[in-house]
Amino acid sequence: MERTARAASTPTPEPLPAGDVAVLLDGVPRQRGPLAAPAPGHPRTALRLRAWRLLPTPTGTPVTFTYTAILALTSLFASCASPRLLYAVYQDSSTDVAHLLRTPVFVLLASALWVAGGLLSPFALAFALVLTALERRIGGARAIVVFLTGHVLATLATEVPVGLAVLAGHLPTTSLHRLDYGISFGVAASIGALSGLLAPWLRWPLLALVGYDLIEDLIAFEDPMTNWGHLIALGIGAALWPVVRRWYRERGPAVAVPA
Image (cartoon, rainbow, N blue to C red):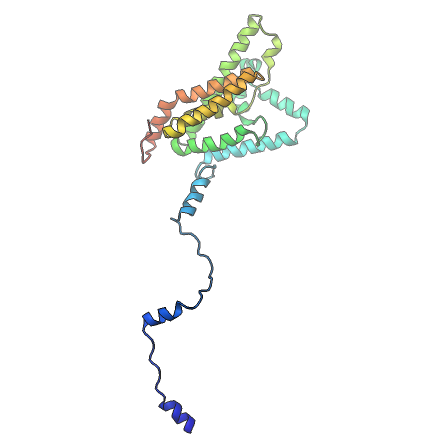
């Protein structure tokens, strides 16, 4: 009873003010808790989202995504098919003079379903990046129009002279069956068109870098007809600047296209 009475008679200490508690806790080492995820507006999150927009997605860029999936399937077929079967398919899809005279629409479309060198080709990576950027700016249907315009016109610009040279006797008739397929002309035209929608500090270095690489290939003279076609396609894309800029404005961008 004595201890109970003594405990009861001992005054209860009053709680310290909040300021004093904070001072006392400053001397206690803080424990590491779980790292909080960056907020949606955090710079790292924004950077990750911007990087993701460089690649085609089924919802953001459905046309480029679908086209890329088709190219992946044809590249997979090319890696699994026998050499004889693959050569036959390439030959049927070739935009050589003989096929252009017989089935021009079919071969112009079929030849754009193959990637020379497979998905590891630089043109395959350029296709995904450039067509994605172009579709986000002018829309999927118009991006494909730009691609096909460069593909078709550059093909005709390189194959028609071959046919005329054969008629004039300057080239053998075997040149009429020269194997020609791939997406490279369309990609070069898309690069030329996209550069017209970029800021000047990015536009001119891009054109200079791509142009230098294509001219270097032409000087090497390994495949001058195709190399000329790449340069022609790049020029076709640059000639489309007024058109793609009008499409860009019609799409309603927040900032006008830089001059």
